[in-house]
Image 1 (cartoon, helix red, strand yellow):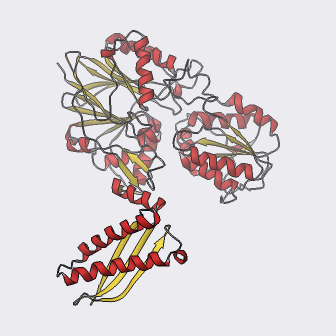
Image 2: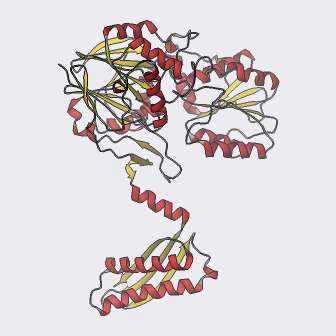
Length: 552
């Protein structure tokens, strides 16, 4: 009988950085490769990706990487993985276009991208894999069912249940889900981000009814409306409403225009040419136009702030403008969103914000999750994707539906659940994982030491002490020169500067007299003594950087 191992390299007890791994005997299947945005304390970090060490060590066993849709928390770490493991990628038709663009931008060639139908069956690495359509904010979204002789391992992907969905590329097929459930499911993995919301998500994910009155009130005036670039369902709603009110639309961000071109090439959705204002024809003094501002994460709100401050290249805020924030604030963007609102109000602007309680994100609420349990009837249930409180609430939903605690697994990143003979054998094996923090380029990943240094610089400042010594005799020939930033005002602290210089000189002279002078060692001694002195005098622990220049 097949041995099955299931674990996550990211996405458990955190928001983003999603990556699941399913092993069937020797075959490894990777599901998703996402990033997450840093906490406020992770200074200078651009984003964080999973630890790929296990996959790199076992790269010959990786039979496929499945990407369910093209949101950052699912796909944005893929280039960093593909540079180390050139395994085949399986995804939907639209997402394949976007992955091609992402890999091309990173200079990755010859990646093997396979386009899957949303409802499909195929053999991959000797294992039967089935996909099934699910409704989400991105078209062509699907879930995955991996067949084993113990039963299916099912991952639903991100989804909602919406009975009013008419477009095929967003449609969910409940018959497919029911059919998989009838064939036997060993383990079901469902996302947890919105498990604490009561009822169904639909129809509260739609924004048309909320923003249409604002369009009516703003007749003849310019509307600036913001939306996350990857929420294509919401962007289509905005375009349709613009069309209904016979307005022109200007796409502020080139990225969203590129996304819409992919939609148009696949005939999923076409923006009428006569309603779009090109960048060449757009003028900032135009009225009765809708300016759609899009972006990802914090960048969306920073762009809006730039517009309010008249620092944007294309659009400058006017008090007659109506501003609609159509994308609710998500974790990690609160500070930037608040700054944006402050700047708009300072300029005398009117702003309408759709909050996360009024407009629900397109993730499953409690009744959506219960429906998955009802349709699939799994033997075991593993909540995934979300902070621990979300995983806990999701697990309790299964408990209320009659699942015993030994059939519900709340795992940690790296914790491996092993199944043989249709029974959970153990969860004791654990991979040691470390986040990979990206700072501009992937080969400049940031360690904890670097982050600690940045924290010190931001709170306590820096002091640099430079001394020149004779290369042969080690006698001090010039200096010491003391410079500080962010620590003390030099004119008020002459005695501190003088004493720091004395400490530096004494350390050098003492080492020379005792015949133990070593540049690196002396700098370390000086750093320790100066740090203790500064803590005593100022109560601060600045970064102290002694420099001894040996002059020949």
